[in-house]
Every structure is written in structure tokens, then in C-alpha cells.
Image (cartoon, rainbow, N blue to C red):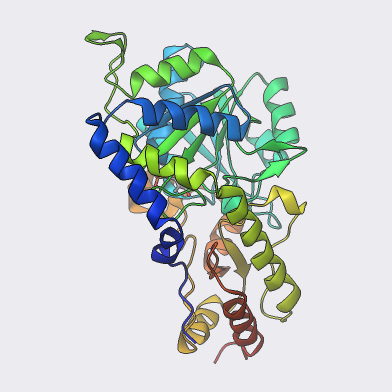
Length: 370
Ligand SMILES: *Cc1c(COP(=O)(O)O)cnc(C)c1O
């Protein structure tokens, strides 16, 4: 049996008829950018998350970046200010900071959850710190009550990179509602994926939502009046229409991901494979199911030899990338070890139980390093 890491074709085939109707509706409307589909999706996604405002943008990186741009326009953060960010994250978290001429201060994660460790965050707060960026890595919420208390105490912005966490919850609240603002990505492979690029900023704050809405559209609030030196980063009508279809099924998809994760966690028990720790079941939207092994590369080869496709999220931390040579001396041994040990098993809303059982069986048969 061949088990793909994630089949986007299967994911979208389930709604192919509805998606085609949605696309046809946009084609026939004659209106393709900043129209009724986007306005409706923004309302629906805000309601889903439980926030007042959602602003659709071109992708997840722009969503993150425009949050900082918006707060710069509001005077809450300035060039040269520091943003505390987990060292173990996708590079977009860093790019959004440096694109705004802010300074990333990477910190070590909690080794069990892979997420920000509030104690490490507190130790990194200095006179130039203005914001904390929490990344809900792999779909699990960071410790938002502790981070929110820290942010309040030190008067810092709390920004959520929720690109992997659509549908994760804590105490009845969804990812994206705990901080001052949150960024989502609708890249096709995310829990809520467009059929192309897309993203959104969600926030309770009307002033930030207004800034972001202008910034994504050349900094314009009214046609041909430009309040800010903005950019062009809009969620187009076709993507918005398709996202409206898929949003209806997001909770079912997350429920299925939780079933897959439960099955993995019940079935895999191996001295060389460490399962992901889960604080509370509903806090995890299982964008990825990430195990750790000191023999990660051998495990990945073993899985592939049996037709099972896994991935590494991520092989190199941002501070070790050529793009961030200035950060290469950051002292982040745990972050670096995680990048050597993590492996993402197949996960997705169309992953069949038989396939999950096959992955479990092959994991159990792993004999360690050759
Ligand atoms: C995917 C992702 C992003 C960027 O989203 P894009 O839509 O690909 O720009 C940012 N942060 C994290 C943690 C992500 O996984």
C-alpha cells in the first residue's frame, strides 16, 4: 500500500461540484477582486473564529506582515523594535518581522509542545521588546493565557501566527482570538486551504482592521485616496468563493484529523519514536502529526521503503538559513536538535483508517539505525 503524505487532489475532489459552482458564480458575476464573495467570506470567517474583523489578503506571510505594518501606522511599534519569536518555526514568521525592519529575537521552545515557553519569553524581554509572536506550531495552541498575561504585564503586542491552527480551541475560543491580532494562511495544504494562495488577518480591533484593509489595497481607503504607502495583497473573488465552500467542512475535517491522531497515538509505541505531547485534545487541530526520533533519517528511509511518505517540518531553523546569516550565532541548541529529530507522518482529512493502520504497522517494525 502506498500512503501519500497528503493528497490535495483527494481533499478537493470531495467538494469538486460545489467548488465548480462557486467558480462559475464568480465568472458570471464579472467582478473578480474586492467584491461580494470576499466580503461574505470575511464575515463568515470572522464569525467562525469568533472575532469582530477578518481581512482577506494575498497569503499568510502578507497577513503576518500587514499586522506589523498596521501597528506601525498606529504607532504601537517602530523600526528597530524587537519581536520575540520561537526559534523553531517556518521562515515566514521571521520574514514578516524583518520585512518591517523589526528585529526577531528567537527563543527556545517548550520541548514537549514545540511551542513558546513563557519562561523563555519572559527571560528575553528587554527595553526594545514591543511584541511577542506566538506560532501555534503543527496546529497546537501555544500557552495563550500565560503569554497574554506576560504581554499585559510588559505592555507588549501579542500576535498569533495561526497559519497551521484553523480550528484549534481552548475554553471555547478558537485560535486567532487570544492575541491582539492573528494571521491565517489559506495555502492549499493548510487545514483550510484555497486552490491557490490566500490569507487573512483577524482581530477584535477595528482600528487595526481598517489599517490592514487599506494597506492591502495600495494604502487606499477610498478609491484613489492613499493614506499609506501600501501594497497590493488581496484575496481574490474566486479564492474567496472556494474558501466559503470549504469553510463549511472545516470542523468535520479537523474532527477527522483528531481521529487520525488518536489512532496514531494509540497504535505507535516504540522506544525510538517519541509521540507528540498534547495538553488538551481540543487545543490541537493536527495540521501535522510530528514525532521525534534520534534516528529520524533512518526512520524516514524505512517508511519510504514501505511506500509511506513523510516530511520534515523543518530541516533547518531560520537562524541557520543563509537568509539570516546575522542570526547564525544565536544560542538555540534545543531548536537545532528538534530540527534534526522531527518527522511528520501522513496526516489529512482524507487519510483512510487502513492507511493509518499501515503507517502504524511500519513504524512498529522500525529496527533503529541500520
Ligand atoms: C504556511 C505558514 C505561513 C505562511 O503562509 P503562506 O500563505 O504560505 O504565505 C506562515 N507561518 C506558518 C507557521 C506557516 O505554516
